[in-house]
Length: 75
Image (tube, rainbow, N blue to C red; front, side, top):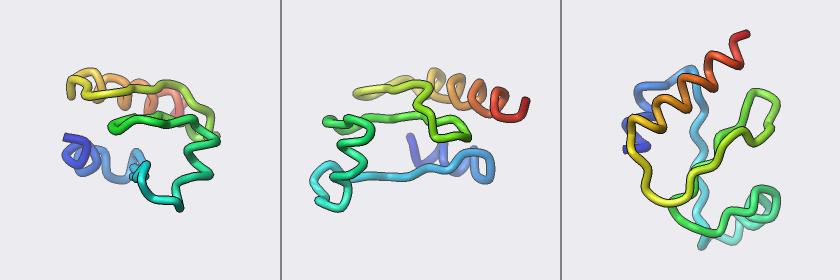
């Protein structure tokens, strides 16, 4: 589902995938505190965390959050 969102929001939202089992992700684990998969962290255009989702989420909720984030960044 997240890959579908990535396609639909191409050019508006940058999606970055991290694997909790990859040691290369350790700095991001420390910075953002992610410990679970899936764990979606939404950042604004300045890199500030604006919302987090842990576990499976309804697609409609994620779309609404992305739309709101895009609207805020375009103001």
